[in-house]
Image 1 (cartoon, rainbow, N blue to C red):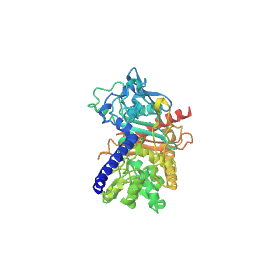
Image 2: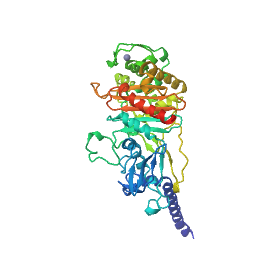
Image 3: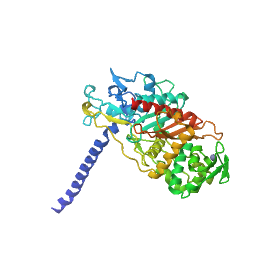
Image 4: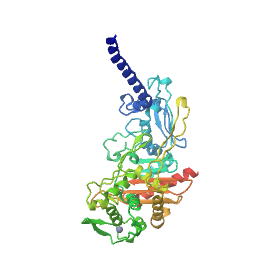
Length: 462
Ligand SMILES: [Zn+2]
């Protein structure tokens, strides 16, 4: 009897382990199956397979951006609209790894929990995806970026709905160019730079340094500096584009005085600069509609004193994604804690029944309300006293900061940035724009921001 019992115990344990394993597998299948099916590495869905039967992709106003007709995948009839929306919609391949036709491929092609993708074609029911993206604003960004490489983000900082997530270069998804892999004009055309690329932020990073100063530097309100255009920090030069004269924090933000902010960064030190940068989204990944974004990085662990100074003006090795830059402006616009942006409004359920619209959640606090109010005032002052309301189109009351980020020793080919937000109750938009090698934030990036802000105001108010 004893022998039987000792033999029965291992069998019982094995049986329990077996069922626990089955339960674990079913749990994961339930949660992740559609993700597994749609992963770009799933050979069953490579290239065009699956997409010919897929549902439609629509913008926030019901404009059809992609659909299937007679077994063929088609895109919006307007050339500029389908090019402009390519970074978000994708083409019929799986090359655009962050586009909805790649990420939501299984839903679009009629993935079914019971049968997977194994149902005969006539029984498959592809779901439709409605985006929060506005194709008119997307097109305005595409046209304003022109032949430049770059990105533009615009999102509602109250709801998190992303209206514009543009990136260039692009190509026509109906006629994919044959030389796409070899022609430099299409360099990085599969990447949505707004989400996945990171760049030196230049003077837009002064918002982070100013937030750190307001948080940690007790004497910041009495800290002033006479700028004659050049100084030495740590035995090496730090320079401004021109002498900025006598500046305090607010004037230094308006004139974008490098030496002022470099001194602030050195006074604060590596630890506090790094802490503030981390609070504001650096050195961490986050997800947007299930897509992991690129990483913004601030690492001064090996920096000399001079390099720490330059890091405070967004140079040295500092890197930032356009979407994180927009979130920083969103935080400043909304009392220090931004809502997370998203761009899929809803996905129709089984048999075309709509699911409820998605909503956003708040990200972590980036700064206190007192600090966000101070930065908001400074960014408004930059527009009023420096850039001019008219340069942002004039329809919205804009707060902004430009940046020109050097990428070579000669200072040529610098990246052009602008970030900011509108104060208007009916149009609460946070934005960021990067124009690669645009040479001047004000001359190259601000006109793109003006184009998307005007298009957004027109779209919302019409
Ligand atoms: Zn200066």
